[in-house]
Each structure stands twice: as structure tokens, then as C-alpha cells.
Image (cartoon, rainbow, N blue to C red; front, side):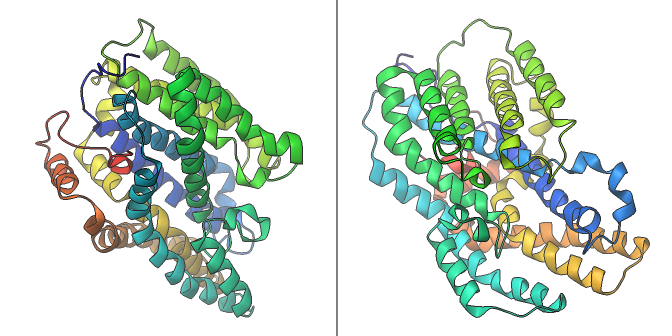
Length: 388
């Protein structure tokens, strides 16, 4: 790529925002499925298990988030690849974007966590909770198996993503600038599988997701070019999707160990990255148009808040329904109400803990997009308020 001659400074793609929203809602429904259907201790709808297996792939929605993050953070770098990159500024922007919402969630999660423990007949271990809070605030809780999903399960991926940011800024960008975009993917693959190969450990942290981030960077690099390579991007995307389906269909949540996830993760990552490239070639393809619908994009604007707050609330509701031995009809009614209420609460949380920390220009761009009057190039993708 000629770094001094990018195609445009455009960094907003509605289908990317929409995909983020879809993935967040799917993770939310997945955790309801785990609570109400899969887990024996809380499964008031356990007989529905065989008919609801399409809801068991929540982990792979996290894989989608990682590719999106690589794309969004890679795009501004790709557009200025020949310019200097400020590591200090990068981390300051990441902290300002993520931490104002993350820190309150960590602290507030103590209440539902303790509530669930008491409802289950257990006790509240203050020392363990204090240690978990400290590890969460340090964004290293995922490195210990005992705390990786302690307090608020989905937060393991926030820690991993922040660790990937360190690799991106200190390793992948220098490799990308010096040796090209494919080289940074090769380095990411090596780094991602080193813990398993050398330590035979840390599989629960799914470190190979750094390679999915690097796939997103490749999609960003190609998107920033004046012209895409002449390849059948739609066909390649469909082929990758077919491989993903073959790998994921026989997979079962909670079986096979964490390392068994990597083939599906890589296939899903490749599918999403190729889709972004295909949509860059033609934004009128059906999946891109569907994901760019205003209601879908709207959910994408507060998907980070939805991801942060939903799991503790799901845990409390599941514990209450289990304790009450709720019938199927009551369970379904309650969960339907919970879905609506939690989504509304996530939007309120976004207004308080996310939106005030966005730049004025970015807030204006989000509002324009929700109204449907945004022009191409007028906004920046949510996680990519400039990376550097």
C-alpha cells in the first residue's frame, strides 16, 4: 500500500456498527440460554435444549468483536501508515474510551454476584471478591483460571482485548510498517499459539484471538487502499462462511476444552474480515445492507454497554427463577421482559458512562447515523475514535 495515497479518510461503515450490535445481542441471548436451558442448576427450560442449539455459539460472537476491533483500530493507522504512531496517545485514547464504563461495571457487579451466591445458599467471600475486583481493574483477571469469569463473566474478553491492544501497538504495528500487513498476521498467529505450544497452559484465555485482530487489520489495510485487488471477494467470503459452518455445527458449548475452539475462531475471523473487504468493494451486498439498517446500527452504538452489564442481571434472574421453580410459561414471560429491560438499561448506561467521553464530532456523527442522514466519511467507527 502507498501510505501517502489512501483512498479517503473515511472511517465509518454502518454495516460494521450493525454487526457489533447483532453480536452483542446474540451474546446476551446466549447467556440467557446458558442460564435457562443449559445449566442444570438454573435450567427451568432444560427440556428445550435440543431445539435451541443455534443459541450455543456465544463464544464465536466474541471472535466477531475481536475482528471488528482490529478493523476499527487498524483503519486510521492504515490511512496514515507512513506517519509516526504515538503509543502513548493510543493508550490514552483506549483508556478514555473503555474505562469510564468498565470501572463502574466492575464495582456494581459485586451486588448481583453476592445476591446470586446468597440465593444459591452460599456465602459471600469478601476477600475473594476484593481480590477479583483488583484483578479486574488491572485487566489481568483472565490470566488466572479461577477469576477469568468470576464476578462478571464476559469481562474476560475485555481484559484480553486490552492485552491485544498492547501487542498491536508495540509489536504488530512496527511489523506491519516494516514488513507488510501479512507479516503482522504471521506474527500474531505465532504469538497466539505460543502459550499452548510452550507452556501447555492459558488455553482458557484464548490467546489465538490476537490473530483474529490481525485479520481485522488486514481488512482495514485493504479498505484504506485506493483500489482493492481484483479478487472474487463475495465468493471468498461465502467459502469462508461455509468452512465456519462445517467447523461450528458439530461443536458443542462446554465440550472439548478451550483449545478446541481455535479452528472455529480462525474460520469465523476469516469470514468476518473477508466480509468487510467484500462490503468495501460493494456496500450494496445484502448482508451489508441488512446490517446497515438504522435500528440495527442504533443497537451497535451502545453494544459495549450491553455487553458489560447484561451477564450479572441474567445471573440474578436465573437464580430467582430457579429458586421459585418457575414454570415454562412464567420463565418465558420473565425472560422476554428481561431482554427488553436490559437493552433499555444498557442504553441508559451508555448515555451516562459512555457518551460523555466521546468526542463532540463523534457524538454528532452517531446522531446523524441514527437519524439516517450521515454522509460517507462523516463519522468514525465506535471503537476507532482515532487510534493514533
